[in-house]
Figure 1 (tube, rainbow, N blue to C red):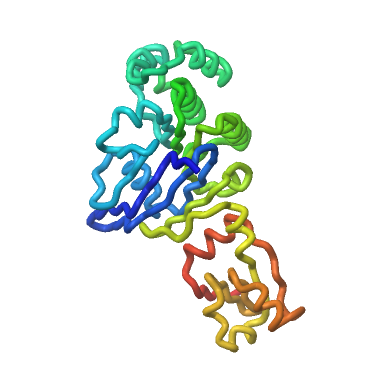
Figure 2 (cartoon, helix red, strand yellow):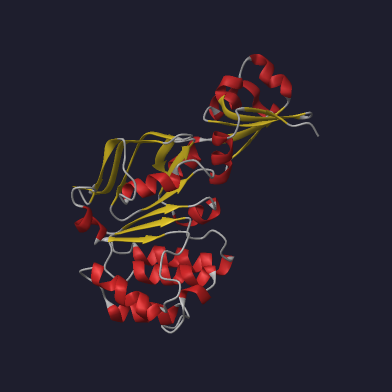
Length: 291
């Protein structure tokens, strides 16, 4: 398949944080959920992709081009939506657009005006008077109005009401109907990704934990519930993460067949949600909870 985004062994070192050898790729026609707890390195990775900060090592290709050497060309085909507004707060939407639109070779003013109307905005509105949701709608209208082939969204649904979050997900589904387009969607609202994402990339503390098809990830793991005596058999190593209680344990494993054969009806095996998988993988492996 054609790669629309390739991140290879990318690292960035700060005083109190290291992004270490991050590698993943995104094919055309798909939505990738980019997940991890706050401080995991999601925004740092996105800033490196957008060349807003300098990487220490590795390389990034967008549309098969180096993102630094061909920065102007690749950014012309990227739509980006951040969790904060970076527009001129004292200007209205019309004047902001006059400044923004010349940067894009395929700016479509009619499409932009259609989206502004669809989102319930008006050109006379000043950015500083917009709610968070309205600012997000303005950013999304800009991102979708210049024939972008890659849409990068950094926590776009954070703090938004469920109705508008659902609207955004519908827009993303419609966007990738054109199979030459892709979306990198960073969020900590995992339920949004369960509805829309094709691939999931999980990072924690600056390290890549996995990057794979969403359905394969969910199929791979199971949540096991049972008595603490089961763990006395030295089986804790079979679990990615465990929560111990006074009345038993529950843990995430990719060895459910083994556990079923060994313990049969003495354990309960459930399929995890994507959020379950993330929480077990980024938490402490052995957490004891006294209730």
